[in-house]
Structures are given as structure tokens and as C-alpha cells.
Length: 103
Image (cartoon, rainbow, N blue to C red; front, side, top):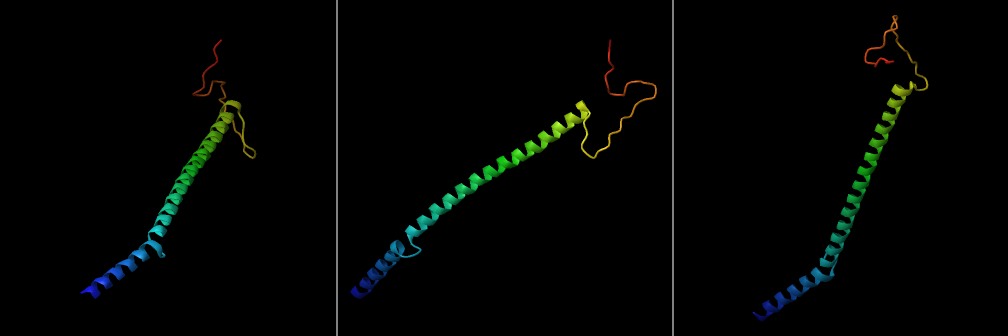
């Protein structure tokens, strides 16, 4: 009986040694968990950065489109290579949708 108990104690000590000091033990698991947490934080930071950059791209595209539309409608500007056609009424009446000038 004592031999069995001694054998069980030795097996328990061996398993505890492996758990605390060998490769794949608790210290290595803690290091891996810390590395995982750092990588998740980095991924979140990069996601937020990508979202900010995507929003900036949308703002720039819409901003340029708004500026271009304003230049076309208010200043009569056209892009290089475009041809501009202005349609007028033969009787000199104002175009529909345009306010008449009042004296």
C-alpha cells in the first residue's frame, strides 16, 4: 500500500512540475494570453484607423463632387474635354425653373 501511495505522490509531483515549469505549462499560457490581448488591442486600433480613413475618403469624394457641382451650376465651368451645350428659347422667354429678373 505504501508503494502505491509513494508512486501516486511521485506521479503527482511530476505532473505538477510539468504544469508549472515545462513547455506548455501555466507560465507559457499566461504569456500567450498576454500576447493575444495585445494583438486584439492592435487589431481594434487598426480597425478604428481604417474606419477613420474610409470616412475621410468618403468626405473627400463627396466634397469634391459638391465643389464640382457648384462650379458647374453657379460658374458655368466644365471639365477639360467636355462639350457644353446651352439651350435657349427662340422667343427670349426665361428657362423653366429659373427666376425671372425683376426691376
